[in-house]
Length: 41
Length: 481
Image 1 (cartoon, rainbow over the protein chains, first blue to last red):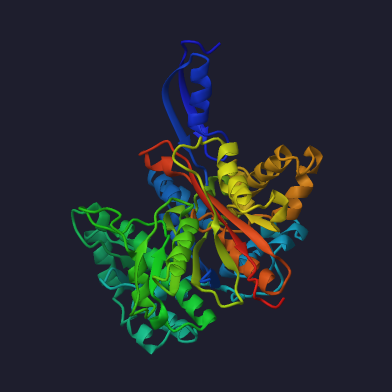
Image 2: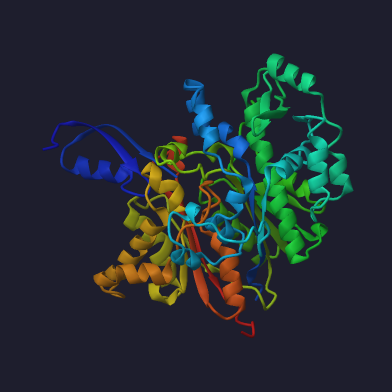
């Protein structure tokens, strides 16, 4: 489903941070074009 | 053994509703829509409302955190009955007095106050036990309203308000250096003033002569500096100077919101190594975070409760056989090579350090995580930070087969507590519970507590890394209780 798809990743510090989502999506062939983690407190 | 102990703590809330407009989020939004300012001002709280707000009473030590479980929410609609601005650990200072502290902290004529407003400040601060005549002389005579207006109109000074009245202005100190512009210096001076005030409380409560302090560590959130060295720092020494710590030196610890835990570990290490006997850790208030979640508060027709500047201070010293020990062999940290997943972070901060010293998760009496008041964050959709952290710790206990999955909520109730700290970044970083924990350990009600905080270093765009540190505080084994 994500193979060769260009993905923008928004992570959240107290939820799922960006690097974790990137690692997961890259493992199933996604092309991560941008990743960032934000903190809302 | 020269085990480092926490000999005392102090907490401050400076009620600063008229600085909410200078909080980062409100300031940016008011710039886009000036009509918003009226809406914000209509939702600001009175001093009485801020003082009787139950989480604020917990912060200064008049209520225990667990007592919040018995107060129906919303807490802002269920104030405490007594108007207690002073608590076991510090005070909630009204804005008039805080304007005075700001002026007393000002070494560069940055703050101009209206000559008609100064007597009002002087009258109030003269009754304050932590300010003397020498302090009051620094208030000076003030300036005429015309002179202040000229500064604002012609020299881009930032107006200072008390309600709807301009009572002064904050001046820049360079016409080209953005790091010395008015609102940047305002942020820095607020950090210094609130930091110094809370250190004065600390020294007063611990009865330590200022000259006996050897080192100060500031974990505040500002970036003091100039165009050639933004964030150059050492607010710690500026704070120490204002508190008469003439024999001390100091430095700042920067680690986003987890800086207080880093600073306490540094302080404990300096004491244990014998380099310094008395180390003060201080965090001053954070102007940019005032009104950070105001949009959620307005949309829920509730008051803007991010109207207080926080202050925290701790005295770390040599083992006195009384006060609780920071166990340096228990320090947990998120290493550079560790994943940023919540599970990996919590394992690094909680599980691994406990295993290192032979303890199980259920051997700890209480966990203090980031103690953000959920009443601030939930209306804006930012979640209940402490509750989420406690659920993660409980989940670790399930994975360790210490508890069953069905017992997660009971674990959270027993080992956690409701959030009660203002959302001032570093201020909620577990340490607001230190005062309560020290008291409970000294009276034999508790044997230990773990303090952990996370830092969002990715916000500075230098790395995608997460961050965090923890330590176990333990009852002093020589203590009689």
